[in-house]
Amino acid sequence: MKTRVLVLGSTGQLGVELLKLLPPDFDLCALSRRDVDLTDGAALRAAVERVQPRFIVNAAAYTAVDRAESEPDLAYAVNAEAPRILAQEARRIDARLIHFSTDYVFDGSGNAPWKETDAPRPLSVYGRSKLAGEEAIAAADCEYLIFRTSWVYAAHGSNFMRTMLRLAGERPRLSIVNDQVGAPTSAGQLARGVRHVLRRLRNGAALDSGVYHMTCAGATSWFGFAQAIFASYADKIAVPELTPISTEQYPTPAARPHNSVLDCGKLEQTMGLRLPRWEDALARVVEEMREATS
Image (tube, rainbow, N blue to C red):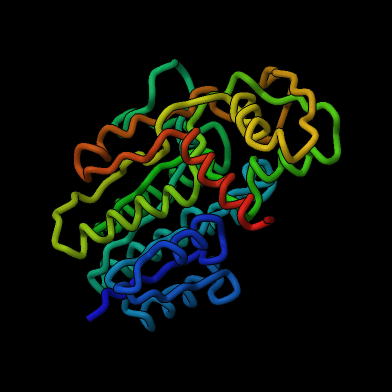
């Protein structure tokens, strides 16, 4: 009998990759925002009741970091209240909840990679709403895995990589922040990580509930990420002139952490899972995009 998995946020960056990569021996029920409104608690509970999954993968989130500053109620409804309901439903039907959080729960101080045991201190409404979601899941006392990740991108959707490529066709020069450091993580690699975890859980592995960090290995700045993106497309596009700037030179409504690097040692030690270096993951996404346009 196939293991039933409910995937929420099926049309988002991660959701699309999950649907591509989860093997056919899982019975997938994929729901997008058109199928269920995450701000409607009753509809969310009804969806879980109808599907009766063994695993709930919540790939949905409010990710408009700057807009969240002026839409805090919506950010909290999607990032905190919806996970709370999913966790309560997971406990009720004895399912395991897999949820995704963010490097933005930290304040970005210091230079050391952040560990799961470090105290969160978010700087923005977005970060605070995601932290509230983590806390709500833990309080529900269900079986859960929360994966914090960073700088997610894919060959589709709205993300830094696609924005850079679009801007290259519009501007001869770009100024990119160079003092925020993190690990660009492709949605495809995250989906592969989830597939690994689901297979282990289905096969009876005992994985403790809690928070785990899951990003690609290595780190760079947004400027370094932009350089790598354009180097991959130098034969295809007119590469703009790039200028490194400070965060102070590019003010945004939401404050960003300067140090977003997450320590993923716990993930490797407990689950035998290590994502590839961010440069290798980028090369894979670039290849995918090239194949799609060839």
